Amino acid sequence: MKKLLMLTTLLASPIVAAPAFAEGELKVYHWFEYIPQELVDKFTAETGVKVTIDTYDSNEAMLAALKAGKLGQYDVAVPGDYMVDIMRSEGILDAFTPEEMPNFGNIDPAWLDVPFDPGRQHSIPYQWGSTGFSVNRDVYQGDISSLGIIFNPPDELKGRINVLDSQGEVLALGSMYLGIPQCSTDRDQLKALNDMLLAAKQHWASFGSDIAKDVLVSGDASAGMIYNGFSAKARAEGANVEYAFPKEGYVVWMDNVVLLKDAPNRDNALKFMNFLLQPENAAAVTNYAAYSPGVIGATEFLDDAIKSSPENNPPAGQKGEFIIACDQETQAMYDAIWTNLKK
Image (tube, rainbow, N blue to C red; front, side, top):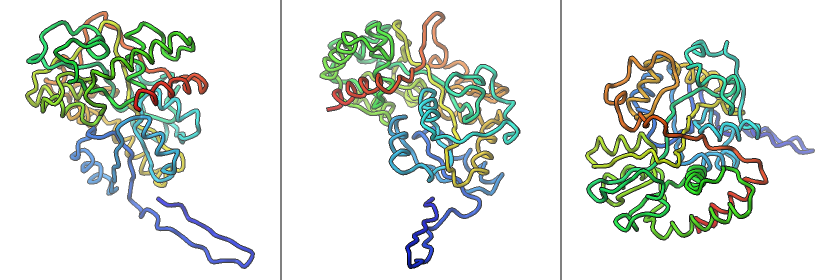
């Protein structure tokens, strides 16, 4: 929504107003291919609120768009855990109280007092999952237990790898592969990360988050960094792919619905967030996207295929890590590595 624009001069110019949202609307900024239309239609049928959804393909793209002028045009967004922390610290989020959301008590206690939003003052859990990689087993039958499949691939996979166009995940997984901490300030470690990524890039066919599933299904890629739900969907669509939980580690993430600052339809935003905390509605997202819900009682509504999915059941002892939000000075160094990689 364009805010009311008032132009005043010494000569008392008239007020000029841009069109505003009508009552009963909601503007959502959302990841691509991540919510079933039937659930959106259900919300509209129950509330009378018309929902408009615009999409993005990375946390960083979403943040850049909001900071470039889209803040105040959307009511809610769906950032990952570390991005909630960044948005909170930059004053991009509005706050709410549990009393404003009757279903707040449905939040799984494991996802309630989270470090990126202690006490859930700005966000609710949406879905959680992992980021690793998948390999087409018709093309490569060897060991896939290491992130070397992406960063130092065997000959069979060279030139046939898709990598997510996501700075946070690429640099986090690269750090895990090298055994260095996230947000390192050690110049030698950062140089090693930069050099390793540039050497690996020559073996990659593409950067793409929204295409990660489709290139595996089509055969345009034989391996790829991917979200676990996308890998499950690729398998369901007939691709002979296996999702790996690499020994060096994998990214664990939680996407969250946040209330944006200057939301033009704040009340409708809270209605939508409350709606998503109903167990059957949280389960509907999981059954569609193939991740995991963060809501008590959702499990009974899940499809059996989701419950038993290998992509949702990592081997015992395999470690996952959340992406860490670096301080501003350190982040600038990682931004430089990413910019250099994408040249």
